[in-house]
Image (tube, rainbow, N blue to C red):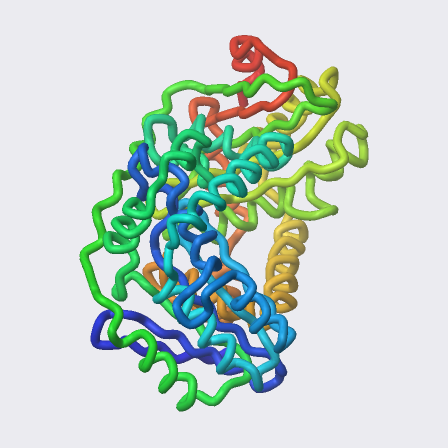
Amino acid sequence: MHYKKIKLSNGLRIILAPMQETQTATVLVMIGVGSRYEKESEAGLSHFIEHMFFKGTKKRPTTLHISEEMDAIGGEFNAFTSKDVTAYYAKADSKHLKTALDVIADIYLNSKMDSLEIEKEKGTIIQEINMREDNPMGDVGDVFEKLLYKKNSLGRYVIGYKKTVASFQRKNFMDYLKRFYVANDTVISVAGKFNEKEVMSQLKKYFRRMKKGKKPPLRGIAEKQKSPEAEIKFKKTDQTHFILGNRAYPENHKDRFVLALLSIILGGNMSSRLFIEIREKRGLAYYIRTNVDAYQDCGYLATQAGVEHKNFALAVKTILSEYKKIATERVAEKELQMAKHYIKGRSVMALESSNEVAMFFITQEIRKQKILTIQEIFRRIDKVTPSDILRVAGDIFQSNKLNLAVIGPHKSKKDLEILLKI
């Protein structure tokens, strides 16, 4: 899988990843800013801006003008906001890439931020907050990060609060865009079937006048946890939804590939230890999964599940037992090899689509110290040994790094913290 990286004079970076075996093309524009860069009074502004980019430009005055143009070519387009990036993308039949690119460039550079549209969209986002509240399976992730990163913007919900969302005026949007939406923190990735000369001509035409700027510094995370902690969001639910995990490593840590394999072995697929133990043997949960999440200055490995209230303590104890086991007993070579094949197989399947290839390169350019090809990543995965798994598991699975977030009809944090011992 080949790629080319070009840097414009204003600092904007472009990554081209040709895929002649596909009939589609994707253009993805990403800015290296998300909710953790917001002031407390700006909570939810990054996400709100993402919404407003689809509300009209001078060339395409309304949402309907934008959506009709993409629908007319059978394309798909969307955006997302996370804690450290915001992205906008369009995917279409490669013969319509010019239109898709024109639409994405237009909304990124020329959105009107109309005051009346801002007022209307407040209601939409407040309903999105309500929807999140009604989905404990999704909401518990926010509770977990709030516990880990309290007193830091990283612990705030991406979507913000009803109070802050309701308070925003057009000036807030324009000030934020001026502060953060700068050329030297913007990356564009184009993947799929395309003519390189035509694409570069179009991108230079649109983006060469974009201004560069100095990104405000980030308030980092200081990992100082000394004892296990729990957080409860009391709610009358049919299930107890929880996340149980440990502080781990930032996104560029040398052991990140070891950690990825560790999470697969524990709870990454249907043959993983926790899936077999919690779901198949004990019937405690319908869903259970272990994931790694990482930011530039911190990270964690955690397991999420939904269980009957009466089985909550047993589920927690069972997960902790598996954490202890993998931290004290060497994994078999065969089990590790299966996890390696799983990651490789999933990666290869994903990278058959132009949108996944665009995402693969752009996230590395924005967040990593160096872009690795899929072959380089596979080589690093292949080097991981059972001793590496044991070493990393022993490092992170310590009681003082343990955290538990719960949504359900529970009230006593002390009762929960008693459970938290590896």
